[in-house]
Image (cartoon, rainbow, N blue to C red):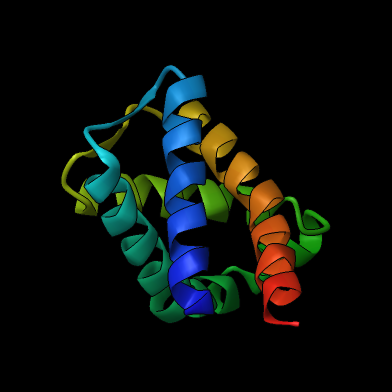
Length: 115
């Protein structure tokens, strides 16, 4: 049940991101649910490989290259998920930053509900 609640809250955050950032559009709430699924699959399977490969440049930039990785993976989710479009790098960067800000909050809500 907690995973479903987290999934729904994440879809609400994705819808909020699409509402406030001009370069990101989403067609409906079911697309937002699918985007959350795509982003979680990208973060599970692709992100560790990309971070491992980019470890030297991430080390040289003191971790700031991680922001670029987040934006590129957010752009990838926009290419994969139907009904979700990300128009450019800066929109993807802002969207990934906002999603990264709200994800720990959603995790804390989930943990509070399970107590």
